Structures are given as structure tokens and as C-alpha cells.
Length: 350
Image (cartoon, rainbow, N blue to C red; front, side):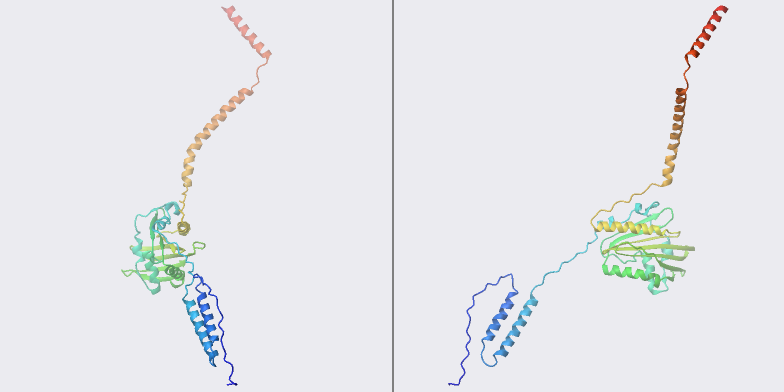
């Protein structure tokens, strides 16, 4: 009894209750861990240290689980602007944007069926041929769209213009594919339903500085069109602005001016950016033909010149009259004497 070691006692400290704000739930796991550690420290016996460590581990795991279940702050979400039907229509180019000689189309050109319907001898190039015929090289829009067609009355070309909202991944994939066309489909042969063959060539037509991404192509199709040799030239352009894009095809059997597509793409990109920013595109100002201006001004200038000449002549005559020297007094007296002598001679004769 005398050798028995003194019994260890745990003195419990009096604690003052602390109010935990309801808005700080993260403190609850910490207080729970502290309470468990205090209880473990008061345990007696040889296994007290091991038991306390186990309880502490369990408490820490419980606190971690609770922290993981706590809601995290919501990240900021950026919503892309969606092209509406009205905006798509407002983003279309007009004949004034294209220049002189353009007007609304009167219908699809006949060369479409004669030179664009066929089967390519290269499988990967069938997509190009079908897309040119259907005029959907970018694929079908996923949202709003607007389409317009125009005819060049002078050169006989035809332009089709489209604006639409696309799926971004599909749109980027289409633009990436268009970039590879000059390499993969630089030249191939296609066969129409009658067995006739025509040659298709494609080269790149860059459009630097337009939109966020842009691709262009010039495609020529050589073959029999309506029973006679024909060469069709097609200029294609596509420009992306956000999730929206414009695309246009300008084609004809005569020479197609590449500047027409460039001008249309520039005007269309500007209009699309304005409508997506919530502004109304400004109408393009069409300048009057120079020849008409010259002919209109010519008739009016001739009468004006004649009138000016007459006025100058009258002014010169008046100036001469004003500048003539006046007769002096002696000359006046001599004239008077001469007149008097003449009168006297007349009276004597009578």
C-alpha cells in the first residue's frame, strides 16, 4: 500500500461558454477537435496516449469531410452574346456596300447545276464540292441566320451572303478545315450525272485583319457547261466574330473581281461587330458616277462662259468710252464757227 504510486487526477477547468456566430460554420469543426483533444488528455492508463492520438485523427478526418461538404463560392460566369434574328438581318450587306452595278438577285444562276453537281475522285474533296453547291461550307447555323443574294448586272456575277450564329466548336473546326483545302484539294476531278468530267482547282485567298478568324478560297471549275466549254470562278470568304460568322460566295462565268469579295467581307465584318455591340450599322454612302457628273456639269458651264465673255466685252467697251480724251475748248469753238458759217451760207442761197 505504501509503494503504490499516487493516482493521477485530472482537474477539469471551468470554461466559459463562447457563442459561435451562425455565419461562421467553419469554426464548428475546430471547436469539436479541441474538445476531443481535451477529453483524450484526461484519459488515464498506459494506453491513454495511443487512444488520444486515434481520437485526434478521427476528429481531423471528420473536420476535413465537413470542410469538403461546405459550399464553395460560385465562379463568375461569362455569357456570350447571342445573335438575334433582327441583328442577323441588320448585319447583312447591302448593294451600296458592294458598289455600283449590284442589285437584288433575280434567281439562282444556271451554272450551279451544270458545274457544281458531281462526284469528286478524291473522297476528302467531296465536302468542298457539296458545300459550294449548297453554299454551306461553314455548316448549318445553330441559331439565328439571315441570307441575301445580289447580282452584278455588268459582269454577270452572283453573290450570296449569309450571317448566322454557330456552335463555336463546329465553327472553329470548319475554319480549320477550310485552311487545309488548298493542300488537300488543290486539284481534283469531278464527274457529273451524265458522265462528263470537270477539273476543280482551289487556292488560298487570305483575308488578314478581319474579325477574330477568317479564311478565303478561290475555286475554278473547268468543264462543259450546257454543251460548251466553260470556266466558273468562285470566290469564297468566311469571317468569325465571337460565336457568329459571315460567309459569302461570289461566282460567275466571266472574270470575277476578287476585290468585290474583299469589299463585301470588310463591310460585313464591320456591320456584324456593330450589331453584336448593340449598335445600328451605318448605311454605306454610294457615290455618284463620275461620267454622269461631268456630263451634267458640261451644258451649264458653256452658257456661263458665253455670258461671262459678253459681260467682259460690254465692260471693255464701257472702259474704252470712259478712257477716251474729252475735246478741249479751242476745238469746241472751231466746231461752233464751222456750224455758224454753214448756216450763213444756207441763208444766202435762199
